[in-house]
Length: 332
Ligand code: NAI
Image (cartoon, rainbow, N blue to C red; front, side, top):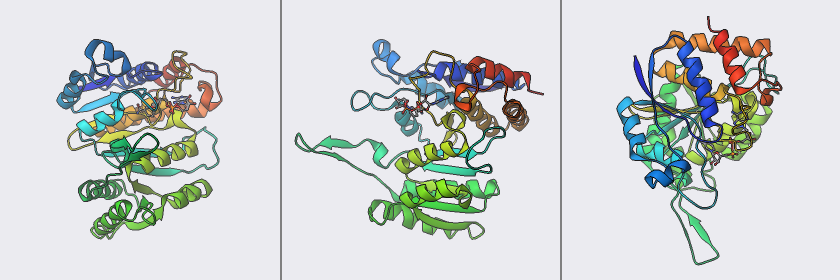
């Protein structure tokens, strides 16, 4: 049996995590879910959107599945998502983008992996006003964190039989910060002669990805570029509704979809549960439950190929619950 922390999240979070939990439980794996709440709704009761027991639960169980949490824009508390990643030192954000059967997109064989540094860069949120009419945001890049994330990308490539690692940067402009990231990447790359290595500037990458995503394989980059490029990659495979993710540290991991709390869909039972379900599949693989992971993946493929129970974002009319039910009915 595995003990897993479940953070339902807010917005569409509770709907999609309920769906994912049902699917995972139906796969035959034995999970003891410890449900803990975080987010804006906790402020009244605990004075913080991230009560201490949430961190303690993940530290104890070492594995968590999480729904999205809303972050106020331009004011209010710091992102709980960012704080969680930082507090638990979940330094690697792994976001695979693979074409799924039955989902028609511009390209049919996309197979990309975004490895995003998860603890620093502009995401460190170190900013201040300079007088009343200017603001300064500090971009932090360290050799240690850069080395750790690039090594993670190469090790991922080796373990998963990938051929190439591309480091993404803007070192032509940010010569010191992105320059350090790039220089560190080049040094780490030398330790992996069996894996092809190249670098690309983030704006050029964006264009090339849209023109021909098959040019790339594993891509490693600082935090903010990773945030943006992984949404672009989600767009290549059918949208945010189908893009899973994992935040991984040493001995601890938190799995969550790439997408946010989608306030436009919240409470309507319309959100696509696949990103959460596929994040669950990544979690099962991390836990060594490969059989259960394969059973769910195969069931998802059957549902997509059949095309009968799809949510609105995939062109169907099924509810979140109906799509989850269809996946469960297809687990063999
Ligand atoms: P979003 O990802 O929530 O939504 C963007 C668009 O994608 C919307 O049109 C939404 O309806 C659609 N979408 C997202 N998930 C979907 C799903 N499962 N099925 C069908 N359609 C889906 O991004 P947005 O609107 O920028 O952010 C909303 C909130 O979520 C913000 O407060 C943001 O800070 C937060 N957020 C939280 C994340 C997390 O908890 N890890 C990640 C990204 C954003």
